[in-house]
Image (cartoon, rainbow, N blue to C red):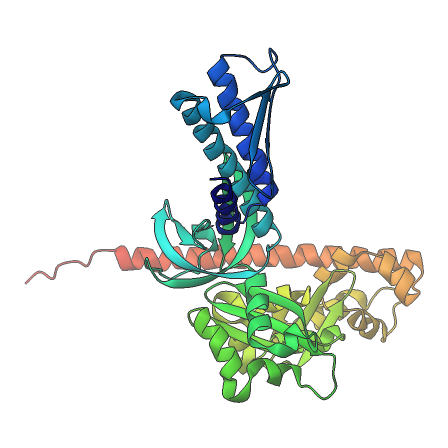
Length: 415
């Protein structure tokens, strides 16, 4: 009997990943509760001690210093001990699950798709733990059927009303990082470093990589022979497009790489505004912007710069208007506009937003002259806004006129 108790404790400890000492303490606590039930005493009325020998399994119990036989307590106290034991082991199991999965946050885990609960997919992670994949963390357009194998990242672990809730994600950017670590050994070994990542789950991801070894091509290693490595990741994500770009410490080079497959003609960076103005030819404009603005949006998040895309005519118009509003200001020479362009200020709107401080500190312009320059830019910006409002009003009137003509019924021709 005593050795059987040791074996039971060993099995529970192994199956539920609970420390054996905790189980022994739970058993002792349950037996104390049973003894109190048998003798009808409250916790502070009498002292009851129970000890289980961890090696032999021998149980000894005492009431107020006198030894009692725990086996003769009866059916009802035994039932009490059973209920207490179940509750305590469940609590220990919850603690064990919480501790285990809390330490695994950010890891990819395999599971079996189970049932749906209010849009969330319940994933069976093991015989003792379930994960929850909320609707917001599921890839758009992806469907999961019960019994399918599924991979997801452990996003968070919470204790909610006596339950451990393991939150999973397939949309988090770090899920892509973990997939690259599994598929590309050089990433795991830190030969290749993932510098930045921007993702719109289910549609497209841009990832910037750099090599810490001159002999290893970062982009080539991530793509793999004939695209084998990247294909495995794309298949896991249900066909989501992945652009792998080369990282550069030069913001201009990085922005140019991030906007691929579009070819960039020129980049003007304004550090004061955190903005990059990118000039592309007409035939590259749609590629640079991308479907619904996705390419430029992901490039902006990847590089950390606010990116404006302009065509050469748009760029030239902005520069000409900037030069035109400043030409009559005393103290401003022909090279002043070139200096502004070097600061990334390519329009009167940029100049209005930047103000006079960079002109004084960066270009060495005297403060009275800088104030006049900014004042001229503000007036020109107001004029641009007025022209824009007038154009919008004209377009609206034109649309209403076309609509009225379209809706007007045709007169019947009298014979």
